[in-house]
Amino acid sequence: MSTPSPAPGAPGAPGAVALTGVEAGRSLRWRAVLGAGSGPVLLLLSFGVGNRWLGLLAALVLAATAVAACTLPRVASLAVSVSVPARARAGEHVEHVVDVVNHGSRPCPPTVLHLGGDGFADAHAALPAVPAGRGVRLVLPRRALRRCVSTGALVRVEGADALGLLSTHRAALVPALVHVHPAPAAAPVLPPPPPAVGADDVAGVRPWRRGDRLSAVHWRASARRGGAGQPGGGLVVV
Image 1 (cartoon, rainbow, N blue to C red):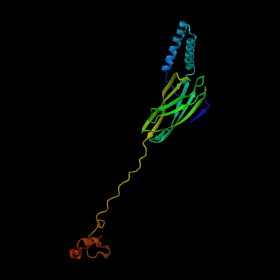
Image 2 (image 1 turned 45 degrees about the horizontal axis):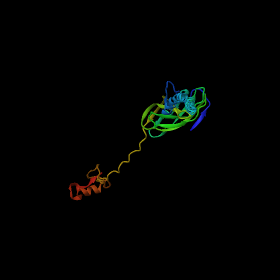
Image 3 (image 1 turned 135 degrees about the vertical axis):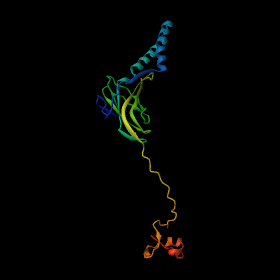
Image 4 (image 1 turned 90 degrees about the horizontal axis):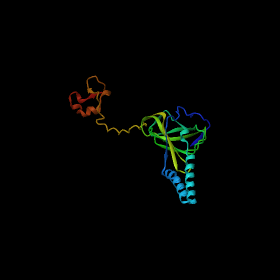
């Protein structure tokens, strides 16, 4: 999901910090190494043997290498910021709003954006072409994996030239503070209580005394004590 942003300045996401002091790099693939090395070799060989077809092949190899170098995305001119809610719960999906602004003078062709390394599930998204001085916003839902305090996301932007010979990347830790709380647990289901033993027992009873009311007699407890044959008639009152 992406929407163009007309603002050429810093990303407007709340609490976002632009990507600064990044580690940028360019990696050569084997096809590029072979192309760059075989072009001059073929060209010298064509001059030595006088074969114009070999010279044409060398010119094509050199042209492909030049096109790859010219169409390589300038990811170093991209500024990235990440905005996330301040609090989340483990297990839920949290929307990460990623703003990418091109501060360069040339448009940046489509690249790939990676988010990871912050206690959330890794996310990968295709970053569309970003015109010069404009920006693109991506909304990436990521699941919180565990309880933690996330200080930022590791953002990595990768791109390749039109021919797929050269690749470039840029990576940095973008600050985005998130407190991930534990997921609420369901209340445990307690087993039913065991059946009551001696449910007819009454703790507050005493032997019957003269003058006690007849309604105060606990007849069941009196019957268990032997009835009227005992001293005092065996009666107990509540």
